[in-house]
Length: 185
Image 1 (spheres, rainbow, N blue to C red):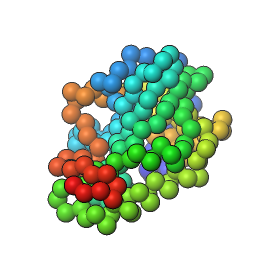
Image 2: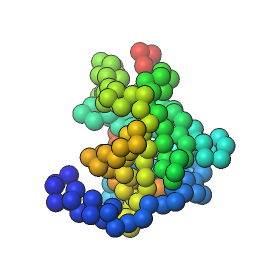
Image 3: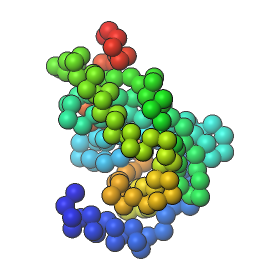
């Protein structure tokens, strides 16, 4: 993101009030789309939430693997509301049941191991509480990230809620087939 756009986004966050209950009305028919591309109807990550009990959710994420076109990983974790923020603890164990989605048009199995290595992006925050505070920004949201109670402005993420009927997909999802890591098609 160009520095001017980042500064403008930070200025907008400074004047806006976060949503008091960012999960109000959210059902499994709605997903949180990060880095939405409205023209292409794509997201880098689509997170779907199922309420387990008040303030606690099971989260299923489908995440595009950057640099490996056509690869998407799907994994499950837990999230909860805390002081108006959506929080979870980053754990490698959440990836134990991960599924690799391979693009049917040419993505090779050898990329699967590289895709699983991409998960290492979260290792510096492993075991730490990661919370997102939701700030309205037109039809989109800006997610301000906190790691162990410390704001991480460098991790602010554009997002929006999308309905399953809106047609949004994770980048690389179209034409994909599913396989377990190291498994067969």
